[in-house]
Image (tube, rainbow, N blue to C red; front, side, top):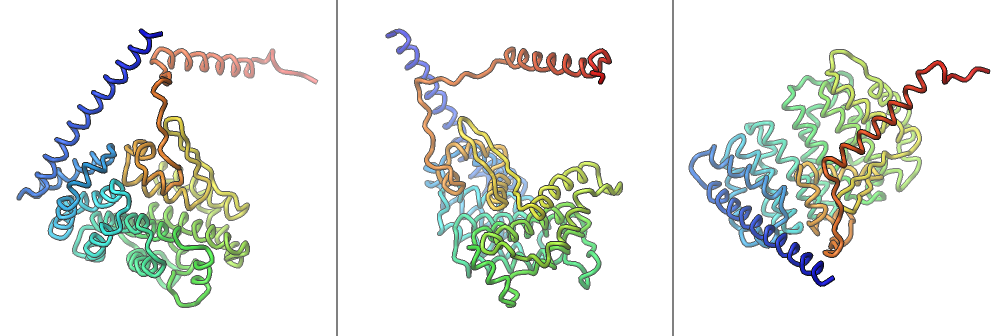
Length: 397
């Protein structure tokens, strides 16, 4: 027993040492790229910002980032205000990653808001950079959790952008290029994210007030006719968010509009137009089948996200939208943030961080074990299908 204990402690010590070395490498790389982000070359700055984003996607390092907060804020502001193209894109992506690292610090959001908003509304800026500013603004203000007045004000700015895809004369779709379509979709997605913060009762009162502080469902349903998949998808999810919020307060919310929405959702859920790409048709049909089921049966799609020994259940349109928004920023590093980032865990109601028992070592399947399991499953399927195809196994009455 004493020998086993010694080996276990020695293994743990080695793992901790490796982790320290790994962290030091990332920190050195971070510092170097933070310096490069102030270089004269625009290409060097853009590449440096991209590298900073990728590090913060994959690593949770709040104390290290906190010590460089002022420098990071200065770099983000200068790159968004004075940079062009890719430099602005990566600077806008870096902004919410900084906030996620620092636990939703409200002062950071306030300092970033104005120039992100100015850039988002500037028509001389590229569509891609404006789209990333939409995403950043939506997530920053979602994480900061401002009062309803501030949220509504920002939501109206988002509407100024996605209204570019509203139907012309409430009849025919507007022709915009694909880059503009992506911008409109990002603005609508950010609008929907802020909607999830508004209490259901307040939201229903605003929709019924006639003050036009929020777009009508008729205008939003017109976006379902957009020639761009991104806009149609964002519009479908936004309508689901609106209905979910309204139904939480009043189960008969928008009952008079339901039949028209069901008809449109049915068309999109069974769309087989050959002029659309096969992948686009498949993605669209899957999304609108979920929306149709929600409209007709009030059943939300349920998805379980597994990470480590934990799982996160996305069982409402709102929590799914919030998870997807954070996922869009953290990318392939989402699992790390779900496990390590206390702020992300708080936002998604995951509770305190789970600390693994060092004496219990999880068993990880080897490549051979996975191969044997898959081979056994394949053999079982082959035998089962063979019996079903064999005429001798048929039962005659």
